[in-house]
Length: 202
Image (cartoon, rainbow, N blue to C red; front, side):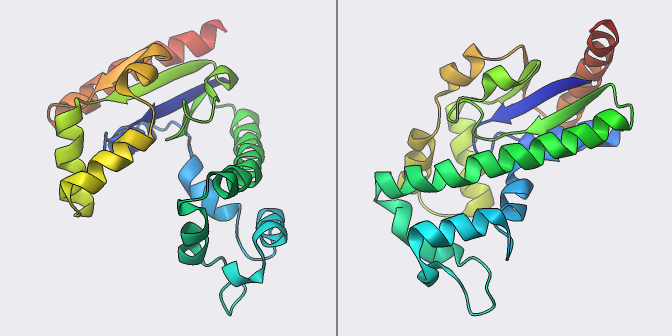
């Protein structure tokens, strides 16, 4: 089974693209969703986070207080690195487990949505990489429209992520999301045919 990573900057349209693949019957594994599973109450991930940051990052019901944890790591690079060192391996384990299930089910390929593919140095783990690409101004406009906030905060978020050039440098295929949703779906359908053939040949 071909392992296909799907990535792109914030507000680039990764969900639109992954949903289009899903509608074609392609299994989709979403790292963002798995990041929540990784810190569920009683999970190994949450226990490791508590061991590092203390019980103050727990809510009364034993679940993770994301706001408290965000406050701790926001301006502390060491704390952020420690957190990433706990969370990312847990997400990778969950991703691999999900992919094994899809492989047993006979899927030709699976899409793995990884927003921070470049930032976490995971490009080499996958057989094929798709980048959802938009120009910077469109990205900022969509981010402000989706999440609100101000231009300064949007630019800070973009500055904290990999650059457009860094993402495109690892891409095997690029989906442009500067046009309509229909144009995106057309690109996904073409890629689906290509990836199905690639999977059959591998």
